Length: 411
Image 1 (spheres, rainbow, N blue to C red):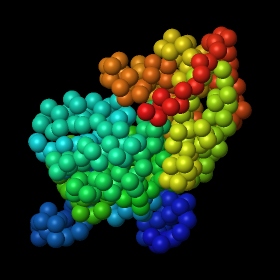
Image 2 (image 1 turned 90 degrees about the horizontal axis):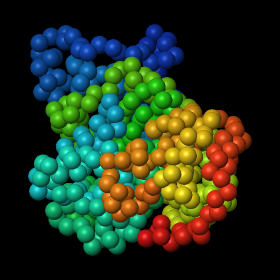
Image 3 (image 1 turned 90 degrees about the vertical axis):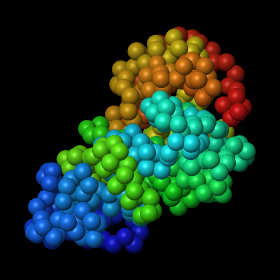
């Protein structure tokens, strides 16, 4: 069994925390499907509940399969402890319910996933928590907005769906100046491409449904944080507040998926770079947002903060909503589907799908245009993906792109 100090990411993702000798030589970790665990004595059971005895006693709180998963993701993110959930939204809500109370403020980046946006405004806000949106791509705006009322700052980087980046180190410094907690959604990058905790973030969350699982066959969420934050997230946010417990079977699938994370992410990144460069020069594409392009407004930040540029691309089509729908309907290889990070390439239209909870005015304010397409580049042959995109763009007709105005994106 390899120790925490093993330097290679893939070695840790495959081996950390598990030794076949402890499990009758089984190469793959056993899946503990039991909902509860017996006590050798009444005193032992009481000690487990009192927190003075380590052990497994009820799978809503602790399970050997989940324990291995949580320890492994913590090592990959270079954090102290992990907590597993049945979805990414379960992970996010548990963090918020644990640390926020009526009268507190959460400052949220300008662009975030639609369901997270809905939770903040339809969930937290109705319980007396102030939700304030600030453009975190400009740290000075956070400096002007933050106060002693601020309890948490939240962002995705890259942001879903328009790929805007947040300077994690700069935002963490400002957040900590008032004693607030900085929470980063690292779903798009995974710890293979970006490690927010090493840059100053307090909590990292994942929709592990996406790249970490990688095969579109599970729902899961993960949190990694310092022990003093992870423990209340487990015992308050998960156990008492939302009960979004990951099943042992899904934990086993996730452990399996994480073994190939590095090789999959490299393939996603390789193909996405090729496709982004192709789209960058296509007349039907008005704007493209990909951190690996040198004309991306935050290219330098991406090079500094991320190992590679990722497998997600966003681009705006000339023709707006009508063009976006026509483009999706013309795809043949690439699936029309939400989610991301799977082996299959997936394309969707945020304005009518993942971000439809936003009003048209809110989408405009949060930089989500009607013609925006979100593309999750899969593991198929890159030439096959390119050909499908080209034939779908050709289907739009001989539309000439307007002059690309990247300054508007940066505002």
